Length: 153
Image (cartoon, rainbow, N blue to C red):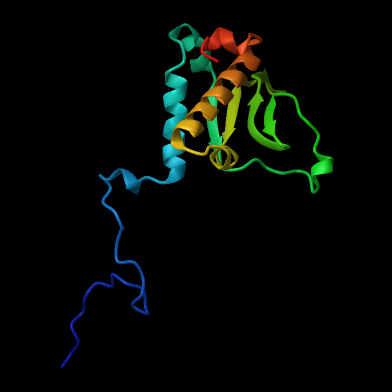
């Protein structure tokens, strides 16, 4: 008698996950990285509309962790346009430029997710911290005070 053929929904040993743990419609389905991306976008959208033209010209990026180019904390070289805490970069600003081939590159603000998540004790605390970082980097880019961009800071 032949054995019935069923589609495999488990791994070979029968201990694997058969499907997603949560349906896609449930908020918990989204990863922490996706939620952080949404947080950054929400904060950028809430900045005063008078800065909208500037913000639209800036690329915002989220990376998990900064690339470490040093071996020891004593070797850290504090770079301009990098916001850091205890020698750990939290954000980096790359001003716009034209490369050697004549291609124009937009200004770019990189937010490092994991160092900020470690420092944010709650969701509200993390939101405030990311807001301060975004406003400070925009003020660095424009050469204005952070209070000019957000008077509440």
